[in-house]
Length: 340
Length: 95
Image 1: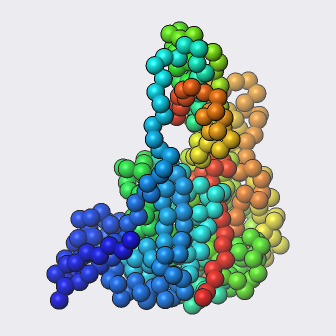
Image 2: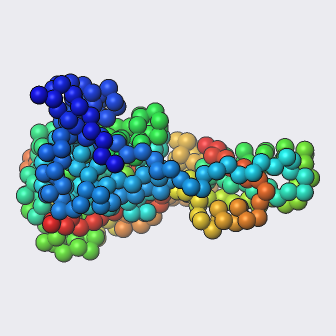
Image 3: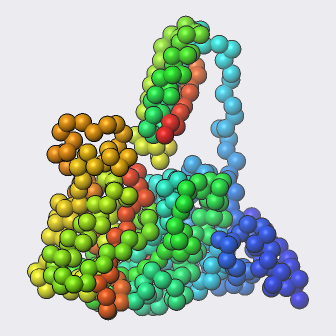
């Protein structure tokens, strides 16, 4: 049922949103009926249509609630189809939405956008791709967070029990720089046609920088990537996202590397001994004879490593993004974005 | 001029099946269910519960079920079996 609240003016409405606990700690845009109407029109869906259901928390999120939160986040109406596709992906049982937004592990939902919609919405895939300055990236990621807070009850300290969380919980949305990639983009890896627009959701830790400036060979890039992936802190059998800088992917392609070869190499090299895992408190129990020669890999196979290209033209800085999920509890999901 | 804004929140839906199960007076001759959440040490916690309860009551049987994943809800078939076969169920998270 639609509930309206009336205030003397704009500033009072902004303050009221803080007081009611409807924000992420930053000011929101008050969601007037006019604004929400424009967002619903752009969505091409009825207000009462269901965007997402979550059975553990017994929540049903309608398209109207998505529109209200999108207005509050500062979105433009044309972002609605992307938001609805992201929520459809988050509702997929393999994503395990309830756990992903609750756990002490403190994940944020990373959105990776592919296809022609990137240009139409003005999504940044280039320099400072994880940083500020682009309305579409900033407000789409923020809208997902506001929906998580306002519609799924994931208020910090209540149902969100993150031990530390990370800054991506404010907003975490990037686009792939398909034009600078010598390889097929992420959504094509996931079985969609290249001309489709798509969003991939991933319950993710923050990005770990992989700096490799001076090797200037594919081998050097692979060594640095695999070493970062093998670090104990985030080591697990979960998925990995690698966001390759244009400079790094150009070196890899120049030296004859393909996506399958890179996945194979990273899986083979991103490994630790069982003894290391025990010494680092990643496995229970004392180190036993034999543990020094038993190797454990990150992920269950090369297919658990997802490769995306994004970032500025200068600089050997790629990123490794570990999954929140320590095993198969939550897997990344890709959905096509349908424009009405 | 006043401004009217819409409420962004969604509440949990009332569920028809959340009534508290009938309490049992004791566990003598009863079937105890133990549902292990899947987190480390949950099994040890439940072992202790089982030990304590077995010392106090003459349990007819104990059914132990372990969830495949701590992050996911229990399988419907497991919940149905616990509801069908047990008089009381204890669950533990461990960790």
